Length: 395
Image (cartoon, rainbow, N blue to C red; front, side, top):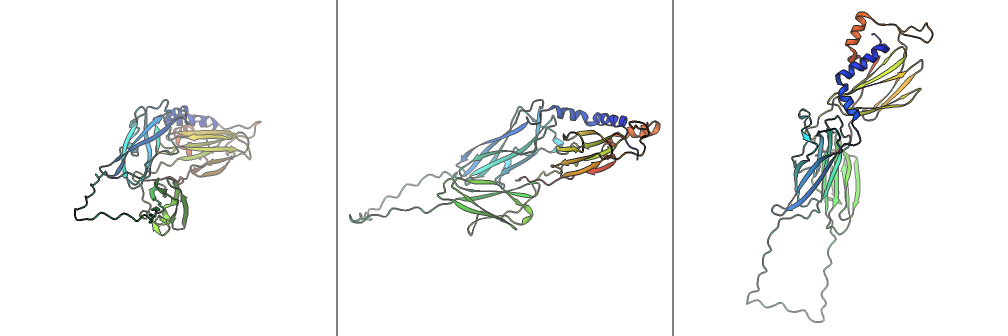
């Protein structure tokens, strides 16, 4: 295979930029830490049905040059309720929402529900996409009931004798209320195979409750005071049915992981490297439907380089190299951990002082130039970035 020469490597970077570099330029110019979604909610008790009706709103904040946005992921709790008007945006729909207008949806939950959540990931038409969920929560209290008119107390019949008054020497014993706990549980499946469990003790409870979450080998007990909840319990979805118990009493029905709708596997990025006569060139290409990832390149000599590769972007990093030179490449998002060693190509002229390189002309040069974009990711050795199943939560 022909090795890339220094002039062709520069032509390669230009060729890659001509195809998708414009997108990268927009992405790199955008302030990556500024964009974010803001989910908020409000609720009222519908006394005709005894249900809470929640109105959710998702706004785009600090979007700068972006004019449109989309929702890459949407999850809500309780898991067995319906959310209308807010959903994950299919890829084919592009960026359908204006950043100047909120996305509004409604959710109806049982009157005994104590808390509801909405979590989203947004992406904007300037190339920036959120990597972490933005979550909105609303406390409900669990006390919404059907409003029924009180029936009047019946009047005693004339034949009934009034109840005798207690004797003066009898002291009534005051009623002592029994301790009250109001345990509740909800479940959420995510696209990565995890069940997110939320457990709570109602606002009207009078004492704490111990709730045990069990699934296969997983078993944890949580003590919750009145009005307290815990919503970050992660259970492996392949461990079998997830149960929540209060002592011997089952709280809710057992739950099994179910793949959510609209789970779409992101496109797989590619990376590669090429040794030239005096440099080691490393490149990464992320497809349009991929997920942004960050790569840290640590050379055996020189400064550490960190690049973030957005969807639809190719990034190329060049290092001056000599015998014994290596680069350690790490990406946590894609579980990449490799060390690349520079190797002197066979066709380099090392006889003169300071080294050199042989020119490539004619048909050979034309063939390499025509295949520049492909060679960017193939190079001297090809490696693929393996997608990691990350932990998230699902309706």
